[in-house]
Image (tube, rainbow, N blue to C red; front, side):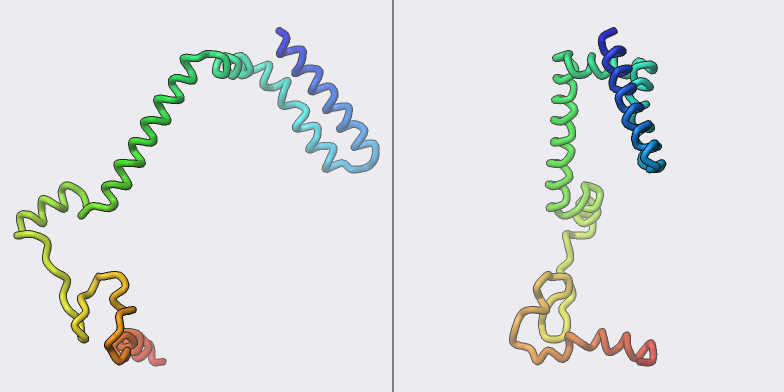
Length: 142
């Protein structure tokens, strides 16, 4: 009952501000203010404010949010640990059936493919690093 009165007063004040704004020939701003001013009354009439009040003031609801947060945290931990591993359980099983994970194939210069930072290692003339780019450019006629 009190929330309905507060919402009606807030809407009336907002509509008064919208009227003054429209009187000053700022119609777009007045329309926007009127739209915001009608929100509290609309929320009060739909009963959402009672639901929000129950949501805020019940400890069991906060306990439920805590459980949901814990669940979300566990999902994140599992995803992070799974991302670090050798893939999914199905991929690990398939690799074990093949006889273990195969080593990456070596490239010219003795560096294996698929290892991050391999292109930054020294001891090479650096010409094989651009061979792929040259092949692509030749393919497109550049």
